[in-house]
Every structure is written in structure tokens, then in C-alpha cells.
Length: 162
View 1 (tube, rainbow, N blue to C red):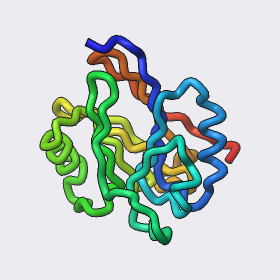
View 2: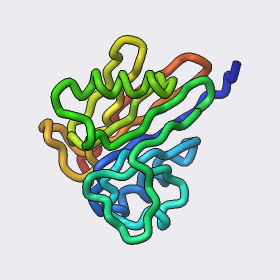
View 3: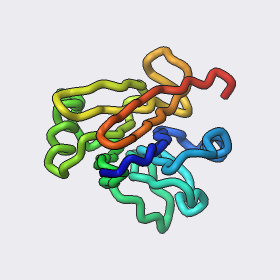
């Protein structure tokens, strides 16, 4: 069993405010992985520390961002999608079903601009919110996951200074 403690930073919906991605990397020098859940609206090749999925506003010429991806981190598998292709009705249940079909125990998704961390059945759902503009009345935000063995800790970071 892998006992290393991994730190994973998760963002979504930066909508062209790419300087924030550089700031987040600078603020989290101990992170093992940086994940962007879509709507980058910039050239993904300019951000070599990040793993991306395509959002509904990502149309950068020549980019090859996948619509979804799975990432193995220690003992965990993370399903990442923007979630704009999943119906608003029962979105969370649908994401859990998709994650399970890929053998994932964590889902990271965006699109809604509403931050949340929620466990549903045996799957952890993480929406980091938006780096740009929230739709839930909260400050711009991102998430941090700490993974060690089978344990998962998740937290939201809110940034009023952006």
C-alpha cells in the first residue's frame, strides 16, 4: 500500500484569468499535482504543471484537451470532467455512476461555478468552484485534496483578494 501523502490542487472555470494559475502554483509549492476541470480559455501548452479537461468554453486552436480523464494518485483513481455534458438533473448521481464505471473513488468537476465537497455513496465529489466568478455567493475558490493510503481529506480555499 502506498503511504505517501499526496497533495492535489484542483481548480475550474478560470475563464482566461491564467495569471491565477501561476499564483496557485506559487502558493502551493509542495503540491504533487495540479488539475484544471475545464473552461481554461487559454493555451493549455502554456501551463506545463497542469492536467486539463475541456470545458464548454475551451476552443483554443490546436489544443488536445480531453473531455474527461482518469488519474491514478496513490491508492485512488480520480475522474475529472467539466460536467457540461452531464444533465443538470441528477448531475451528482450521474457523475458518481460514471466514476464507478471507471473504477474511480473521487470525482473532480466544474461548470456550475458552485463550490462543494460531498460524499455520495462511496465516491467523493469535489467541485472547486470558479477562479473567476461564483454562482453561489461565495468568494472565488479552488480545492485541495490530501491523499494518503485509502484516506482522503478535502478542503476549499476561498480567495477574496483576486
